[in-house]
Length: 320
Image 1 (cartoon, rainbow, N blue to C red):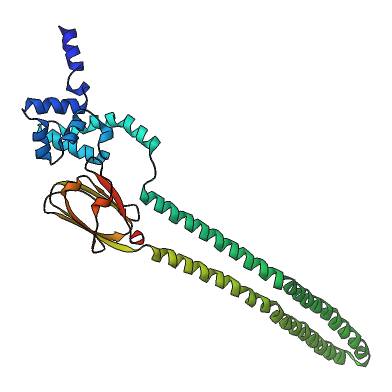
Image 2: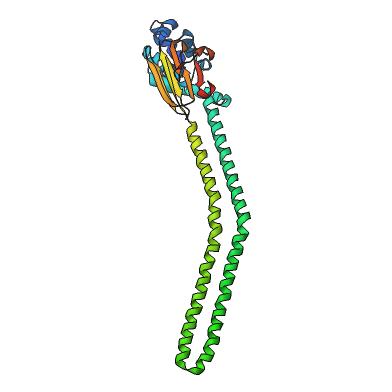
């Protein structure tokens, strides 16, 4: 008896698929798929897909979890337990989807922006290198020659002033010690003033080319500032308004890749958002959408493909 009881526990509700348990609970409450679909505001095909664990026919995981949790509440099941088991069931399906996944329109736009920024950075770096090379080529030899000339003048003036002081001090020593001392001091003062005047004259020659080198660098930095301000101005603001005449799951992702709207809208509700475009919009029940307005203009939903009542599209003023 104990072995038979353990076998029954292993085949109990926790070992079954989530869809099978929901089907059994529905039948236990005496409801058919149409009754559940009417109360959940979904099509009977969605209810059948949930019960058959046909996840490929279902919308995104977020919608599926919302449907399962509402279905569990309707049939008096433990929603948290079903969601945890559903995550385990979806893991192989997610891995398969990840291998076949293509980048979303928002990701493509983000990659294009990053590519343009990289190209702009490389262009600015090349321009800076060219300007620095031109400055060095034009003014580098002249700066070196001016520095060498100034250093040569200082070295030549120092020994001349010393020898002059010695030659003048010799005849003065014959006349007396007092006269020679005065002559030596006066000559020393004269010789000490001459090198300082030469050194002062050499400084303007070294400072002139440095002032000219700063101009190209300032032009480059201004160019970089203009490029950065252009990138900041590229992110424009847009408005979106969606009205509903039934229950519908809605998601909105803005131009910064942020998921700004995630909700289950009810009949008579309106979703308003204003932020950076483009907007990636996901609607779980197109039939429950009364209207969509982008930048004050009505959006025709018939131009977008619908799969199992679900549609996904991108709104951008650049694309009309």
